[in-house]
Length: 482
Image (cartoon, rainbow, N blue to C red; front, top):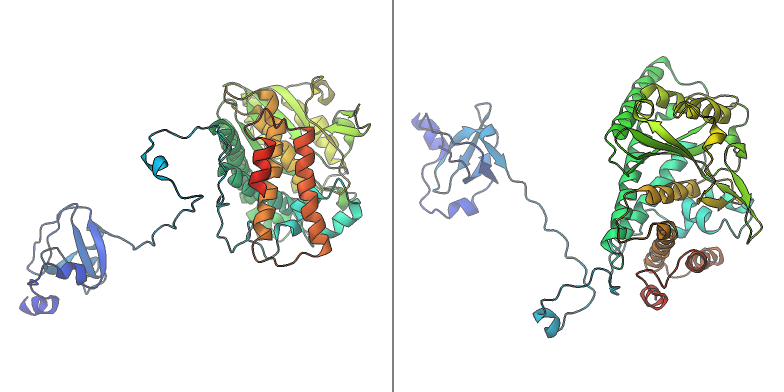
């Protein structure tokens, strides 16, 4: 025993040796009374120094207490505190005056405050999306900004990703939209009510990405994969269905759950269509189910169409809503399996299978009987081929913003135009960040895309956004963007 004590060490004369001793700091979780001469007594809540985590006795560590006494103790009686770097210093907009420091008045919630150093949530030397190229070279940006002005074939050449499937394009769009929501949550001019709507959209986007990660990618393989891969695919599909049913069952009232989906065409691979399914909980036992589809390759006979009286262009209602859906039907895993069957296995007429067989099961009415005469969600046809699916994503989340639990301080009729306005405003902010991040010169194509982004923001603000009624005035917005 004397040899053991000599190897461990005696009482240290200087109590400050605990601060200078080698090893890691640990917090004592449980009290322990030493039962041998070479053991160290522990007091719950105290801090000790762990000199050696492993000794000759398994499950025992060598340490020293505040008095400088060394000894071994049970390793699972303490929790080692890992050294964490300090958090980064937050950015500041301006230096406060003496009057502002002495003032006790709270800032107004709805007031617009210009912050020069507004943080986008990324380091100043990093691009917003963390990709190699700037934002205006992202497929979602090109398809969303340039589509109204450029021929579709030219857009396809920029947004086409080799060997990508509809799930990859949905993932790209959802991640892009999630980044925009993060920026809007940090926007200083949005009131708490608007930020709640954006946060609900962000939460729905996170749920969509979770479901998307469960869908196996080998369903797009030509041979379907090996027997082992098919068995793994079945397990992943069961997990996906379990996740969807659980999310729908736990959905709060007046909230939306968005599930990514689509179908593969057995006749023409170019007609593979990504869609988004939107589930809204109306009450404890009643739901609404909507199919958001903006693809031009799809048979448009299932979605209402009209001629815009102002522009004389054909428009289409992107969400087709099935109302009065009972809980036992929307929360049935068999329904969701049939809904995803055209995505997991190629069918000759996948549109008819979804719209005429599966969806009418929800409320026992034909598809065309669910057309609402007071439709508010019209959109024009894009010139591109919807390769990035960003338009479908934007329309689906604008619909979810309209259906979510809107604060009483916000007029419901202003939700869609204002959220769309803020979406394009955030994109322009992202462009401004990338322009000032390591970009010395812009070529002709890049400069054109940047100008089109500003033009799109101006069009949305002029045609759909009522700037005088919003929390941001045109002068304040111009000052903020300069």
